[in-house]
Image (cartoon, rainbow, N blue to C red):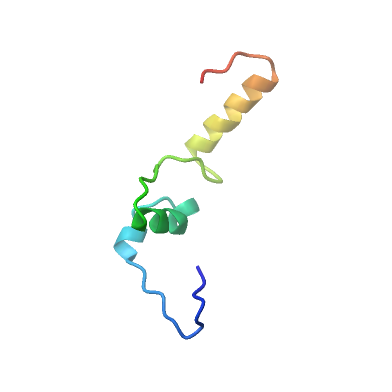
Length: 68
């Protein structure tokens, strides 16, 4: 996030920011401020969610049926 005015200061609510996963923390923070409900279990660069995502992709590439 870059303010248009270079003299402007961004003050983010650190407690609210810390509620979100590190991989998309700032995007989720802003989306929440404008009224969106943010999913907290989205795949990131590492972790069990992304491992499951890659496993599903490998299964699909090998011809196995994929649950939707």
